[in-house]
Length: 228
Image (cartoon, rainbow, N blue to C red; front, side, top):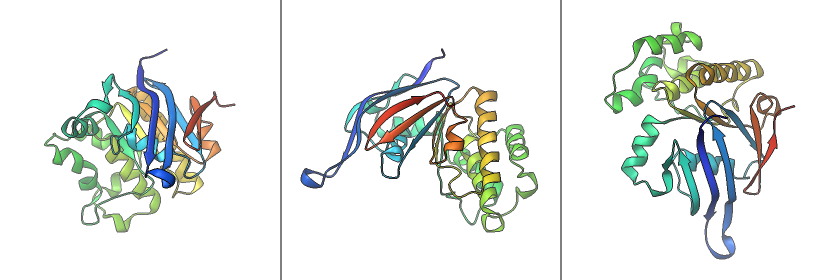
């Protein structure tokens, strides 16, 4: 087995207090290895997005341990967590979150520019080719289809070559053909660059392509094992 890139132990997250308290995560523990594609399924409101937000340092847990590349997220300050987000992970949301006044290339390289990191032009060209966006690199978001906008968001999340990819329903707004292509690109990326992928999905066909499948139910996580 590879290195345990993501390690979560006894994770608990509660929203609200007293009678209105909601336990979004209830004693969640699991690991994901380097180079592994893990899928998390479950009904809406089961805690999947809360888990991803904590792994992406967009939210903090109330109890438990979260380690990514042996870094303890629970004991890192805001500056350290910001550096972690910039350098270690790429997050792909269901919503595209593109900047309307920036073209495709400008949207993709914006995170690097904000961090004063030089753009790897060869890698950018490779990703644009892989996603079929080369001829759209100077187009603006309103000139793109939904599938093309999701591909831009995808490349933007990967442009800094993250070790971990966190994807929250990345194909939720796409048709079947575009969904298949996005998952194919993700699988190629983790294979080529030895990345770790944790993907949330409602689609059993997508989950079946993962190395392992977890299911979230009322804040509790169970492993369903290998896809059939």
